[in-house]
Image (cartoon, rainbow over all chains, first blue to last red; front, side, top):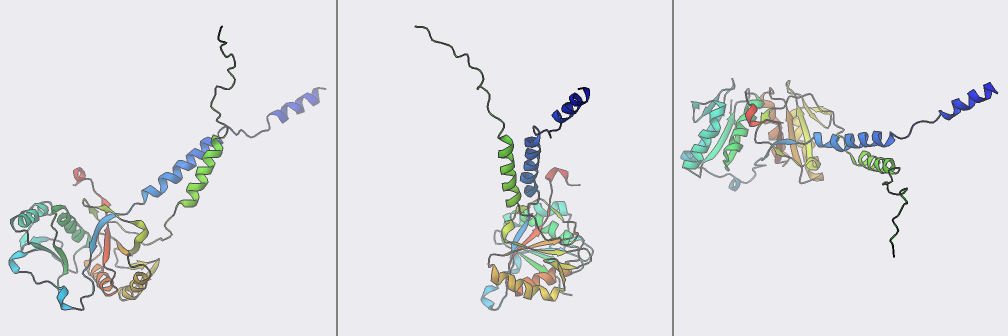
Length: 140
Length: 140
C-alpha cells in the first residue's frame, strides 16, 4: 500500500507548467518587433550629375557666385582659400548664401583627404540650407 | 416586484487562456515578415553627421568601402573599375535604385571618387552617404 501511494504522488507532478508560455511568446514577440527598427538607414542623400554626354547639361556659373570649400590632402578646410574651422563652416556658408542667393557651393576634396572630412563638410552644407551645390575632386 | 441580484460570479473574469495562442500567432507573423539583411559587407566606422535623414531601405543597394580602400558590392570584393558594369545591371533592373555608401571615415577620398565616377557612368545617380546619428549637443 505504501509503495503504491508514493508512485501516484510522483505522477501528479509530472506536467510541464504551461502558465508562462504566453510570457515567453510575448518576449519573443517584442524582440522580433524591435529588431528591424534598429537597422534604419540614416545618411545624406545626393543626386550625382550623371553622364554628361550633351554639353547643354553643364551650367556656366559666374566666378563671383561660387563659394569653394576645399578639403586639402591633410584634412584642413579652406573656405574661399581661407582656413576655417569645421564648426564655423555652416555660418560662413549661410552668410554667403544670404548675401547672394545665386551662390553655388562647390565642395572640392583632395584625393588623399579622408572621406569622413568630406562628409563632415557635406553635413555642414546641408545644415546651412544651401540649395545649389556640387562635388568636385582636386585634379592632381 | 423585487429585482433579483445575480449571484453568479463565476464568469466575471476575462478569459486569458487563449492569450498565449494570440501571442504565438503574432510571433509567427513577425518572424515570417521580418527581413534580415543577408549582406555581411565590410567592417566600417561610419562618419558622424547632424543632417542625416532616413533612407528608403527597399530601394537601397549597398557599397561597402573599408579603411584600406577595399570595395564590396553584394559581398564580393570588386576593383573600382567593375563598379560601372555591376551598377549598370542593377539600374536596368530597378531604375529607382539608390546607392548607399557605407564607407569608413578614414577611407581616402580617392576611392570614393573612383566609385562615384563608375556610378555616373552607370547612370546610378541617386546616392546616399550613410552616417551615424549625431546629437547636436554631444559634439566634442
